[in-house]
Image (tube, rainbow, N blue to C red; front, side, top):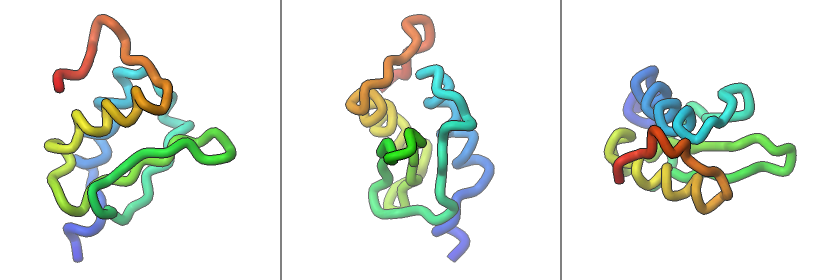
Length: 84
């Protein structure tokens, strides 16, 4: 059960990526429960919801998160692009 809930390491890993995109942490929602392969979506109120993956380690999933954010229209800072 503990592996189904995000921990501080998961949250900090997600912030490493969102910080590269200049996304304000106050505009991000990360539910405590992990889900499937993970994902990200912009909600109707403009909040970015990010779900950590249950089926893979969060750190291994970060390049996928980066690509998903690009697909949602976010742009990484040219100085600190995520290595995928």
